[in-house]
Structure formats: C-alpha cells, structure tokens
Length: 302
Image (cartoon, rainbow, N blue to C red):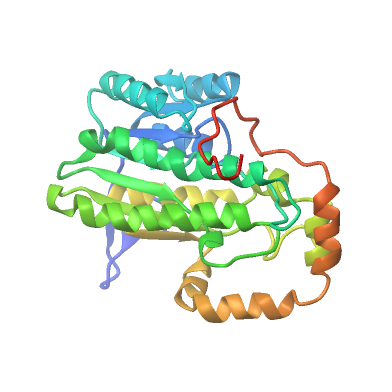
C-alpha cells in the first residue's frame, strides 16, 4: 500500500484525501518539522507560505517549495505576527490551514534554574501560538478552515528538566481544545499533534545534555523516532482536518492512560535526579533557536 491509496474492507483500493491546492501557512518553517512538512506539502501540490526567524534557512526552504512566499517573523511579537500573517495570506489569495509549529526548548531546573528560560519558552511556545491563532482566525473561520497545533507528548508526561517545555505544550493543548469549541459554529476545525522524541535538532539541542543523560542514563526516554511518519501524519491531518494525530503510534496509548504513565515515570526516575539537577544548574545550554530581543511580558519572572 502506498501513500496515495488505502484498502477498503472488501480489499479494493481507494484514494486518500489530497492536500493539492490547499493554501497552508506554516510557522517555524526554517528547520525540523516545519521545513520537512513544507517541502512535502509543496511536492504534493499544496501552496505554502512560511514564516520564521532564521532567514537564510527559511529562504532555502522557500526556494525548495517553488519560491513560496516567506517572511521573517518573531511569533512573540503580536504586531509583527498580525502584519506578516495578513501579508502572506494576501499572497496566497486566502487561507485554508495553519500549522502552529514554531517552538523552542531548553532544559530548566525549576529550583535554582534561570527563570528567563521559562519566560522565553512561554513567550514563543504559548504566546506565539496565541498570537498566530489570533491573526489567522478571521482568515480560517470558514467551512474548510483548519488549525493544526503542534503540541507534544510532553504535554501529558512530565520529566525533570523539561518543566518549561512541558508547561508550554500543555498550555497550547488547552488553547487548542478551547479554540475547537469557539470555532465550531464557523465550520472550521482544530487538530492537535502529539509527538514523542523525534529525530530533530529540537530534541538533540534542547535536551541532549549532560544533565539529562545523568538522570535518564541515556540521551532520550523512549529513543529517537524518525521524522518521516510524523510529517506524513501532519499531511493526512491537513487533508482530513483531523482532531488528533500522534507519532509514533504508541503515543496514543500513553495519552489514553496519562495518570498511570506519569506514575511510572515518577517511579522509574526516583533515583539519580539530584545529581542531574546539580549539573543542570551550571551546565551551559542554549535555546534550540537563538531568539531576538523582546520586552519581557512575564514581569513576575523578570
């Protein structure tokens, strides 16, 4: 069975829904999920528009997508997001879907760590999603409109040193659930993507640290999953306007038994955390994407 066909109950093949002709805006499109998805959607006939902050990488992705329209955009700046979204939507001639993918990660020891890590993570991963949703809302509030928010398994399962990232992904999960209800009367739909540790720079640069290895005994909890199936899942979601997608497949099982899974994590990591936290408090790390300067919005953490 190939990507363009599926087998019916009687064994015949039928076409899968296509993304050809859809006008899709992707945030954080310079690398990782955003870049791979943009290239695949373009290859399958979609019209994509891209935004991000890594201009040289973004320009290359746009060139690979048939000189797709793109803009520099800091999603943590609401005025900039509004301006760029309106401009790119006009170039596309309308909008059928948005993929809220822009995000950053950095380890943080909640006690004794740098509070600016949490502030910056929320500014991009939560406020950035909100500003994007606010800007695209008027363009997507129609029968074919669709919002795909890239959350994470980290929204449901919380690990030491990943508190800032987990909090941000749980927050966008809540935003997505709320928006789904608020958009229902327009005919637009909202989907949520839950991915485990994918083979991207987000995983390796964000949490492939000495402190994490000290706690986990290795670089990742579940091992790196290939990026390809996650990109295929995103494409299917955009074609079908799906409510939920996961990758790898077992993520759906973990989501189904969240409380038990969290208890298992708590139990399995009961030893060795103290040493890892000590390392994290002094280990030099950086965000997965260097961020522009912006006015702090979480004054209590500044």
